[in-house]
Each structure stands twice: as structure tokens, then as C-alpha cells.
Length: 327
Image (cartoon, rainbow, N blue to C red; front, side):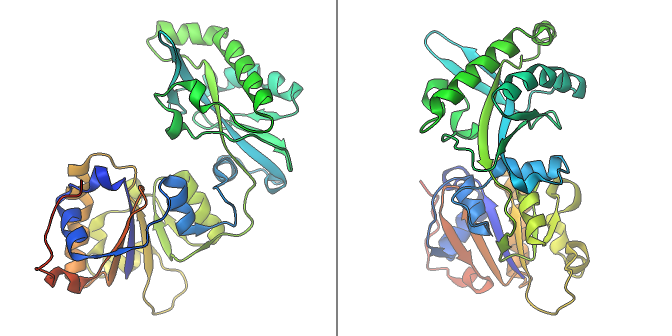
């Protein structure tokens, strides 16, 4: 089996004991552009320059029969706070909203966007959407990861139609700030939903190509991509453990579905794991043992910072290569 790992940025994970060994013994490969979007596009070919995140997650959150005919945009619930000179994005999506709170805020926002020609929908508490007519010209939107904790003014929409969308954002902030539900949330010590964050625009791809037979990830975007590519997808937290690399359990647990005897290719997405000691102990050590025992014929490391390395079982004998922690 060939195994590919999606890992956090090299500067974050490079001190993990197993990674240090792999980098010293393995071979470097051509790097790609940094960032989550580039990492996933290297694993899943959609034909688009950026991943249509909104359309992909929408395909999981709602069963729209005509979803492929629309352009989707995420309009996630957000919490912003003003300091002395700036307005900062402090939270996006994960605000602990109940379904009742979500629907109450959605009912307030629907007329605002409806008047602008967009259908607003909040099928679940973390991911909200705007449906736009296919062919709608949109400005460039920053991802939440780019803007979190930073000055909002540095990440507002850019390009054609930017002024219109900045205006829509301001109007949404006014509507949300005045909603009585936010006063109640503040009294209960919860962050108010006083803004939205637009991002992830795109059309659902009709075809996705991937080199992998199976992917293991808790990311909804990866799950959606795997579904369109018609490959197996497993939730990491609920269904997968590195202990499955032990012998025959591997074949039955990964549900290879074509019945052919050939080398398999597995992708495991670990990029969201920020506790390096836990990553090392819970995952990397077991994978390293499987590599040494020949259960993995090739291991590829893909870091979110763009670096790539290939490690094979025979590489462990490269004792002359000096082990050092990346800067």
C-alpha cells in the first residue's frame, strides 16, 4: 500500500520525533504552493483554479436537486470585535448556535439578501450559504483562516463588485447587531453573531479525479470531493485508527471496492491536528512501524506549507544522513 499524509506546516510539525527521522532518511520531492487549498487541489483535480468550497459543503448539507446549476457562496456566522483602531474577526462558523438560534437569525437575513438577488439559507449552524445565479461576477474573498485575528480592513472583498459586497456586509452587520438574540447570548456569556464571512465561491464540479483509492479525513470538503470522485471516504475520528495497519484488519476496514488485487493508495488527512506530541504518539509512530515492517511500500509527506517528501522502507538504512530538526 502507498500512503500519503496531509500534515500541518513543516515549521509546526517538523520537531516531531518520527518526522525528523523521515525527513533525514527520505527524499525531497517538488514542492507545491502553500496552503490548504493548494494541498487539496494536488490530491483532487476539479479543473478549477481554487476549490469551490461552498458548493462542495453545500452538497453535503442539503440535497438541492438543481445545486449544480447555481454558484454558491459561504456566508458563515461570525463574531467581530472592535479594539482601539481596528475591527477584528475573532470567530467564524463555530459559535455554538442552536438550530433555533440559527433559524431566527436566518429569517432576519433572508429579506436583506433576497432584495439583492441572492437566496440566503442556513441548513446547519456552522455553515450558511448564498445561492447566486450561475455566471454572477463576484469579488475575491479571503478565507476565514487568512482573516482570523487580523484587521478586518485587510481582508475585505477585492476587485470587481467589491464595493457592493462590502455594503452588503455592513448591512448584515447592522441587522445582526440589532437582533435581540445577540443580547441574550451576550448575557449568557456567549459570543454574539454580529457579522458574516463571505468566502469559498464556486460551482459544484461535475467530475473530480484523484490518485487515491480511499481517503481518511474529518474535513467536509474532502468528504465531498471523495464522493464526487467515487472513492471511499472514512471519518478519522469515528471510524479509523492507525492500529488498522496491523495485518489483515487493513483490507477489511478500508473497504476497497473494486475487488482487484493491486497496490492500493490511501490518503490520511492529519493537517488539523495541532498537538504535535499527540500526533506523534497517536499516529506517526504506528505508521512508522508499519513502514518498517513493509506494510507500507511508499510514504509521501505533504505539508500544508508546500514541502513534500517520499519515504520508503529501505530508507531507514540511510544511517549516514544526519538527523536534524527543521528550522
